[in-house]
Image (tube, rainbow, N blue to C red):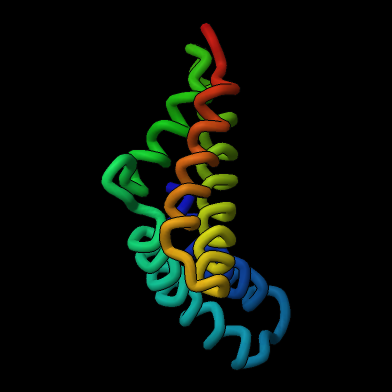
Length: 124
């Protein structure tokens, strides 16, 4: 759900603004291109952060499960922001690892990020 929100929120904002004011064509093109760019970015992040010990999507699942408290409203709120934090952090970890040309450090840093969520998990 976070990936869908990250991908289509700019398009929604531009379409909503078109009802009230004139929107420059560049904004509309950028909003149309952003879901493709976001999908390409997170597929690259998936490749960079996945390892034999922990797959990228499993890490997202563990981070979300660590925020489970048993109350639906609070669980949804905490889980949403936990996944959003992991998505953004993993993108920065991948970019930093690409700049340093060290894929093993990227995998290790992502594993440490998920372990941080696990260590500070919520208890029912």
